[in-house]
Image (tube, rainbow, N blue to C red):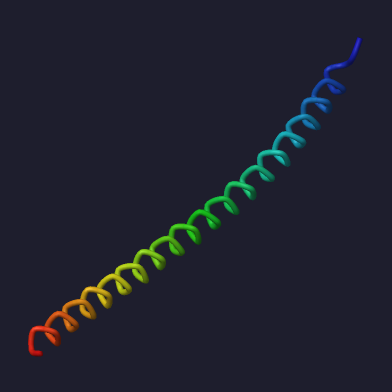
Length: 71
């Protein structure tokens, strides 16, 4: 049978290992959050680019319509 000291040492070891695992999970979550933030930023940039393209296209169509009506 283990002594109280041995059991406490074993518990301490288990807690230390558990803390290490939790710290690793925290790092993974931080990385995941950063990746998601970059993904969101990229999607926002894509949306802005698409809006600009559509705006330019509408302007071009409008200009072409105005040009043909003056003919």
